[in-house]
Amino acid sequence: MWSVLLILAVGMAIIMIDVPTLRRNKSRKELWAFSVLLIGGVALNIVVGLGVEVPSPLELIKIIYGPIVR
View 1: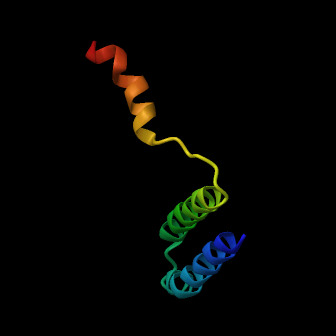
View 2 (view 1 turned 120 degrees about the vertical axis):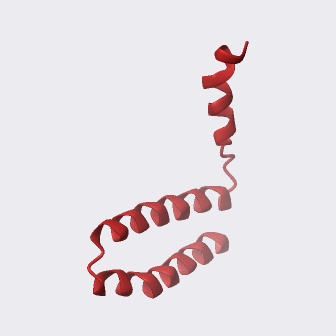
């Protein structure tokens, strides 16, 4: 539980540091990309913090390219 709170606190700190600059510069595309990547990263870190095993992206690459290599 503490790990989830710590992850959320770090995510909020990153938002408070970076978002005002992006809004001031009117960088809408960068703000969207930042938001999507930060939400994805925070979500994955929360899942790992709760002890759920997250599969490696390398497994998907092996499944896709497996038939081609053989």
